[in-house]
Structure formats: structure tokens, C-alpha cells
Image 1 (cartoon, protein in one colour):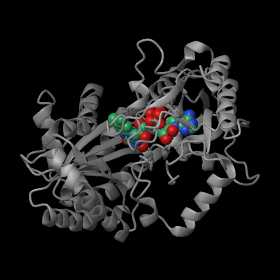
Image 2 (image 1 turned 180 degrees about the vertical axis):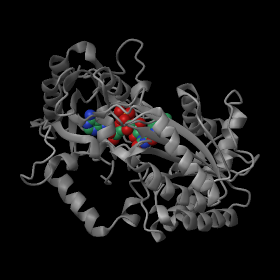
Image 3 (image 1 turned 135 degrees about the vertical axis):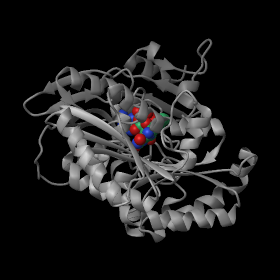
Amino acid sequence: MSPLLDTLSNAVGAAHVLTHDDPGADLSAWEQDWRQRARGRALAVVRPGSTAEVAAVVRACAAAGVSIVPQGGNTGLVVGSVPDGSGTQVVLSLTRMNKVRAIDAANLTITVDAGCVLQAVQDAAEQAGFLFPLSLAAEGSCTIGGNLATNAGGTQVLRYGNARELCLGLEVVTAQGEVWHGLSGLRKDNTGYDLRDLFVGSEGTLGVITAATMKLYPLPAAQLTAWAAVPSLDAAVQLLGLAHQHLGAGLTGFEVMGQFALSLVAKHFPQQRVPLWDEHPYCVLLENSDNESEEHARAQFERLLETAFENGVVSDAVVAENLQQAHALWHIRESIPLAQAEEGLNIKHDISIPVSKIPAFCAETDALLQHEVPGVRLVNFGHLGDGNLHYNVQAPEGGDAKAFLRTMEERVNTLVFDAVARYDGSISAEHGVGSLKVDKLPGYKDPVALGLMRAVKQALDPHNTLNPGRVLSA
Ligand code: FAD
């Protein structure tokens, strides 16, 4: 065994250092990314059980000049959490660190280890009578550390913000193996640069998050879900405006789904009954969280939909009668990525555009893509309330999906990202940069911002040992 592996075994226990030399070793769960776009090879997978052990691992790797890839649930979508193919990197898996450290009811905060699975944090909050609102389809596997490292969004951003807005304090192991004890539950603290915001969204390139203090909210008295068919994307944006007016802070979800995206759910998961999709170009899922009562929420929804019908903004609509129906409607929305995967490989884009410009962006970009690849199929859906679209491009019907990806991905990406830039958008709304978009950043990010990011990286991780080649090119 190498001296480094010896030191790591002493630090975390031999059972928690996994290598390819172990009998029957299968490290694929840590080496293969969720979308199966990349398979790396790790020198070792190290699974510390405490912050002190994380710090010891980081110090040992720094002394040996070995780079580290922090990993939570490995559900990231931009190839940022798996090692490269060199066999020289250590995967630092946080999943053994999964305890809820404290709930402060009066301060409305929960403090958790970074390896806590998101759903476990939601459950712990609910058991204490609170809402932890971060919610996304990977919540059964992703960890709070990964959510913070990618500044994850999800379906409730409209009301509660991204992971960043939900975070009050962090505990972080630096690239030098020191521990920054920043687990503050303060909502106000103007004592200099905001280090918390620097680490949030840094995708494991500036430090290893070991714990976080997150905001809690009162549980709503009622949550109602409606499904509305709209005659156009423009109408969907108008409906969003009306929903803001009628529901105020009660508007906690506003998702748009294009007809082709819904047709894939109907085709591949026929047991799910998708309402209203076949005669309308778009459907919208709305959620109203009410602090008064279900009757109040229902009355608000009825007034909103009445106005929307009168204005010609909604063509048809259903309001879920009970929680089961609401879950079924959300399940349809969450099944779109899986249905799309069933249909075959596709070119994914996670973009954001100012909400007001989304209809024009889609009209222009849809036409450009159709011109470039006649018959191309667009799987357009996403968090319209936040201006975030999953604007995915599928090969024409019957086409060879693999060949399409191989020959067209670069061209399609350029076409879409150039349009995003023309409409003042971002080429990564919520998934991050990872290694998938690292070569795109220089073309689309302000050069001064990019220079400042490099300076920060150089200051915090001068030897480039933390997740090298992710976010910024190595
Ligand atoms: P990982 O995948 O393990 O890691 C992601 C990145 O964070 C890597 O760069 C890694 O190095 C770094 N990292 C992980 N843990 C730490 C740590 N403790 N300290 C420092 N760096 C760390 N994202 C959204 O924003 N909104 C969505 O709606 C959404 N839906 C999704 C649906 C599905 C089905 C899937 C598979 C993914 C979805 N995602 C979504 C992607 C999202 O980024 C991840 O699911 C999640 O936030 C990552 O958490 P993780 O624990 O799996 O992190």
C-alpha cells in the first residue's frame, strides 16, 4: 500500500478507504456520473465520518500533491462529482456524515452534516413542525453538501430561493485542511466579505463543505396544485403575472411543460394519465401554499383561473381534489426527464432567460434549430417562474440518436448558447458548470468576472488540488 493510502486508512479507518485493489472491488457508484456521460478511475474512494477526518484527508492529499473530488449523492448533471480517468484522484465521499446536528425552533434553523440526504432534511424539519422548502427530483439521493456546492434550485425557488438563499452558515474544510467554523444562524452579519456565498455554488473547487445551517419555514396550512393548458408560451408568461397578483407569496411553484415533453410521458409511462396535453401547445403546473386554510387556497385559485379564462390566457384547467391527485400531477412533471431518456439520447440545456423574453427566445431558437436540423424535436420544460428552462434537443423521429449527438452536439450547443447570450441569459441556470461546460464559460462569461473567479481560486486553492478542471479549466 502507498504511504498516502496508509495515512488515509489511519485517518478514517481502513474499511472506509476503497481501492481497485480490494477483492471484488466495484467503485462504479463513485466513478460513473449520473447521466452516464463519463466514467473515471479513482486512486481511492475515502469516506470520512467527521469534520476532523475530512480535514485529515485533505491535509494528507495536499502533502502528497494528490487532488480531491468531493462527492455527495453523485446526482450532479454536469460531470463534476466523478474523478477523471487518470487513476490518481481521491474521491472524498461525504455520505457517512449524515446527522442532523440541531434544530433551533425559535431561530427557524436546522444544522446538518453535509452528507445528509435532502429528503432526510425535509423529513427532520417536518417532524419538528417546519418546512424545509428545497425540493428537486433527486431529493432521495442528493445531499445538502452537493445542493450547496451546486447552488441547487428545484421547484420552490420562486418563493424560497435557491440553496444559497436558504443557507445561513457553513462549516468548510479549506484546501489546506483547516476548518472554517462558519455555522452561523444569523440573518444579519455585515463583518466583511461573505465567505459563505463564495463556497456556495463553487462545485467543490474552493473547499469541502462539511455542515450547514439552513432556514426553516412554518408548514403551510394547505397546498393546492392546478394544471392549466395555455394557448402559447406568451400566455404562460401572462398567467405567471396573474398568479403573482392573485396568490402573492402563496405562489410556490410554476412549471411549464411543452406538448412534446408531455407526449413522451404519455408514450413511455401510459399508466400516468397526463391531462390536457394533446390539444394544447403548453401546460402549466401551479402550486399555491396557503397559511390560512384549504378553502382559502381553493377560492384564490378559482379567482385566478376565472380571470385567466376571461383574458384568454388559459384554455382549460383542473385543480387537484386531494393530495394524491396533486402528487400525481407533480409526478408527471418529474417524469419528463425519465421519459426523455426512454426516447433516447438528447442534447440537454439548463438555461435561464429573463421571464419576459422567454417567448421570443423560444420562437427564435426553435426556428433556428428547425432550420439547422429539419424535424428536430424540442423537449422544452422547466421552472418558468424562475426563468429557467430545460431546453433539450432530441434527434428527428426515427433518427440515430447516438450519431445525432456525435455530429450535432457542438453545433446545437453553439446555436442555443449564442441565442441565450443575445437574450441576456445564462448557459447554466441551476446545474452548474462541472467539466461539461467548462470550455464554454470563456465564450459566455464576462471576462472580468472570469478573471476574478481565477483570482479567488488561486487565493483559496493555490495548488489546484480541489476538483481541478471543474468550473475553471485546469
Ligand atoms: P454531487 O453530484 O455528488 O456533486 C455535485 C457537485 O458538488 C460536484 O462538483 C461535487 O464535487 C460538489 N460537492 C458535492 N458535495 C460537496 C461538498 N460536501 N463540499 C464541496 N463540494 C461538494 N438540480 C437543480 O438545481 N434543480 C433541479 O430541479 C434538479 N433536478 C434534478 C433531477 C434529477 C433526477 C437529477 C439526477 C439531478 C437534478 N439536479 C437538479 C442536479 C443537482 O445538481 C443535484 O441533484 C444535486 O444538487 C447535487 O447533489 P449531490 O449530493 O448529488 O452532489
